[in-house]
Image 1 (cartoon, rainbow, N blue to C red):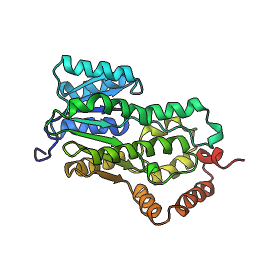
Image 2: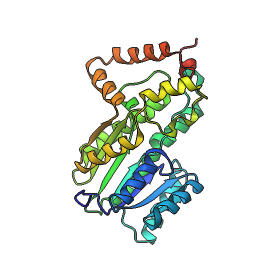
Image 3: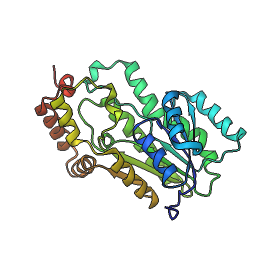
Length: 273
């Protein structure tokens, strides 16, 4: 894999302790000779990953939504004389599917803090540092919900749409640094950890529409190798993207109809009035 431009680079990955972040850490280290600095809140999970991946994985445990922690992290990089080549903003949270009126302002602020402002803080803090690299790159993981809004995900869709718009602006403004916005569909990761318990039948139904996270990450790395600036991953994401472009008003309504007809408890609060 030495032919990839990111081979052997130093990569900072947020949300590295699970899901896409964990898989990216593993593949970049084991298959591409990278050094990864993982960031997440749970130190025990990060330590377990370090034990599995060895000396090429280091970590800093902190809440990515804490702006002060990013400044401290930047100071740490300077003190240790570590040149970061790539920043991957992957951390994210999906709150329970529900109607907007069931959210408090604090609920929405928490989602925006993790899904959007954490990336704002990391980019603002680390961009001058990353730009010193010959292979500077910032990859922002958004969501298919930024391509087509899904009923019951108002806060989540808003946060991911904001990240998509910010990244698209950064792509236009920066010629020498590779920026990319990634919009994956639903995958079998622990992003559903905030959702209500599902019965076996419902879990199987949800699994049918979810992509294999390892396949998603493999495709992401292939797209990154070609320096694609807009990356859509997963069949559901591609379908949402395609039909939302053709029928921007109709497509969200069809998705809402399908979710309602599914009678999965996950979406019960969305359609109850």
